[in-house]
Amino acid sequence: MAREVASRTATRPEPSPALPGAGGVPTPAPPSAAAKSLALGVLPIVLSVIAGSADIVSFLALDLFSAHITGNLAILAAHVVGGGTPHFGQLLSIPAFLAGAGITRLVAAGLEHGHHAALRPLLLLQLVLLAAMLLLGIAASPGLDPDAPIGILIGMLGVSAMAVQNATVQVALPGTPSTAVMTTNVTRFAIDVVEVLRGHDGGAFARAVRTGMIILGFVVGVGLGAMAYAAAALWALTLPVGLAAIALVLGIRLMPRATR
Image (cartoon, rainbow, N blue to C red; front, side):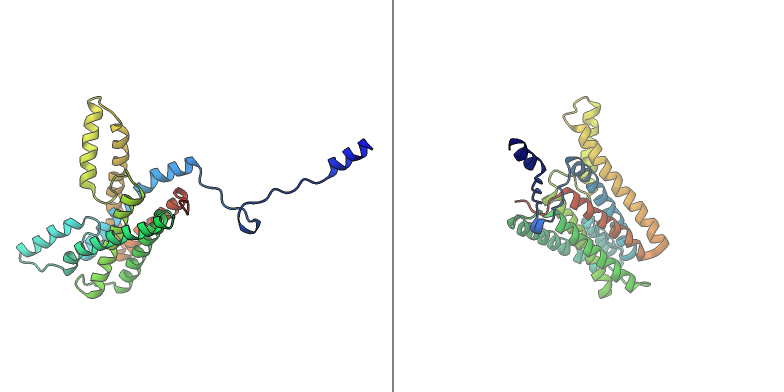
């Protein structure tokens, strides 16, 4: 009898473990620590290349900086003093950038209130704005007039995209150097290099490397964007649009869907 019971017990199938997720469908495994670390290191560099390429293309096509907004004030003043005709988009870029950054913060706050990570939706928003800039730019080419309504709209889409990027780094990637404004980064890089040379590291070497890579990314973006514009006019905006798609993928790898 004991042998028969043991035999039945040994041949009884084990119950299948319950699969997580609704309906028994497995949920995707969360990103590993290594994948998160890689995405966190690469994402700011990709964003800096986006800013550099978008900035130079908008300047060459529209006489408008989309990333270095304060530079538009200098261009505006130069036109006025030199007797030239300033572009309305240069003046409008300041309030447009402020509005874009403020709206980005409100969107992030709403997502955080609902226990959702803000990074992915904000990167998606930037991608949509850059894609709209590309499509309208191609439709309006050749002979795009920066002062025509379509030219102003295209410029403000670029400005808004860079406002979203700047605000996203502030609210969703705290501690990350700016990916669009290089003056502060160059200052920080120079200070950290001097600290390393003085033997007073204190994390200066790591900061210098991180900041230096972002500066390099922006410079590379400017170079690639200029070459692309020389070869293909506003089709050059496919460069920041493609990079924005890569940034979104990195954001997906970096952040969970919900923060709860």
